[in-house]
Image 1 (cartoon, rainbow, N blue to C red):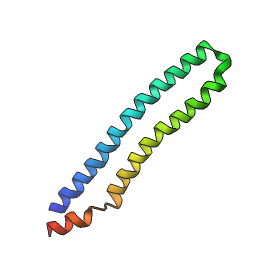
Image 2: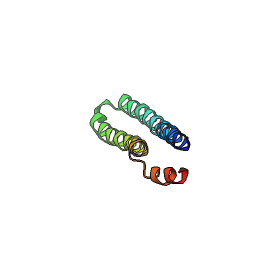
Image 3: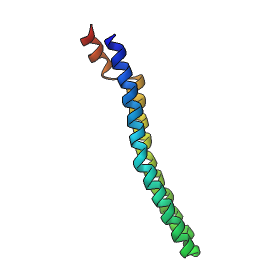
Image 4: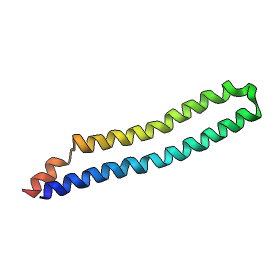
Length: 90
């Protein structure tokens, strides 16, 4: 029964971690997109100079979410703590 609690808490931690990790980059991407559109609206001839750093910044923000997803998948499918907690339960 203790194993069920461990795995249930692992699933909750993975879901909570990905949920929290997406809030920051989501807000940052929204702000960056708004500022890029404002800059392009002010100076349409500078579109190329604005878009390259904009897309690079979005890619860097998105890597934070992918790192959180990777950690969550590790917790779900290759949990390094499973052997410790399941051994204690027996």
